[in-house]
Length: 340
Image (tube, rainbow, N blue to C red; front, side, top):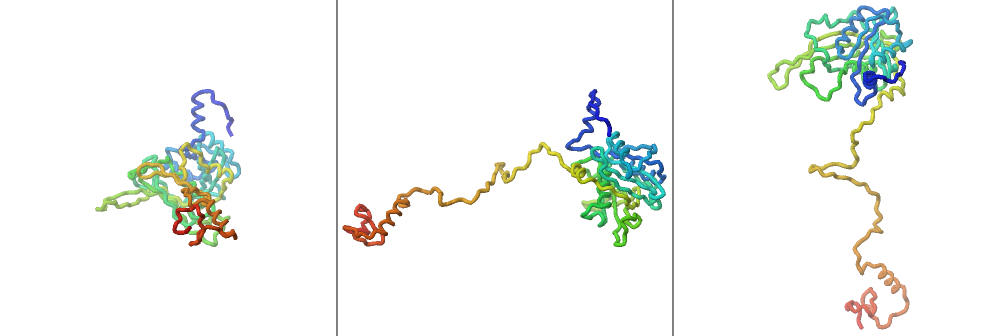
């Protein structure tokens, strides 16, 4: 780790603020390194990958005695020194010839690593294809074909898919210009077999990486006719050693920061006129305590009096009962029920 020094000048302060975490991160920069022994085929392949990502890439030509899976401290030092989160390390040995190691860092610490073993027999560089070259900084379309990439459990192929997407992503954009869709990257994987040995890379499915130019021609209709032409490079890989990310570090890397945008409120919407409409959820109501219209005939005192008259055994003098209801002599209005 580099020593943390408080900035003394405005220029150094701006440089530190540029590296500070942001809500919208900058495009990831890739750093290309080579080991003490690196074959010419591996160097040509790294040169082609560098040309496809030239706007957000840095390349070192000196040899570095680094072994990523044994000690990654040198790679994290280079990552922090050059402010790069992607590292491509090329090496070649008798046991692992023509190897390109993809590394990703988070907070200048090693997140995960994966080895790509290049097949020198089928490799073709961009210079070997006599076609029009895509402009620098053009974002490609990406296509992944194969059931190996659809595994629900994280493995070497899902990690390779994530790394390649990060490598070719480029600048984030919310708008697409059809004229800018000039080439696509197609990554396909062979179907895995049941006899494959996980510890033997030669038995694993092969990864095919191809780059094609997209050409649109007249078709006599509203939609043009689309044709593709191989642009290069042409690479075939077999996946090697894999270092999975730490669970806590991966959770921190995938965390989304809280923004100042107003959150959507539940049960509140706007109608076509623009008025705000709210929905309120209420509990069960007790209708026995509901306030209704007051009427003299609905008073409770009358119910109590009627019960007293029903229970009394003493005969009433001066009252003749005609109906079921008992009415006293004071009730002069009830002429149909009482006779004097």
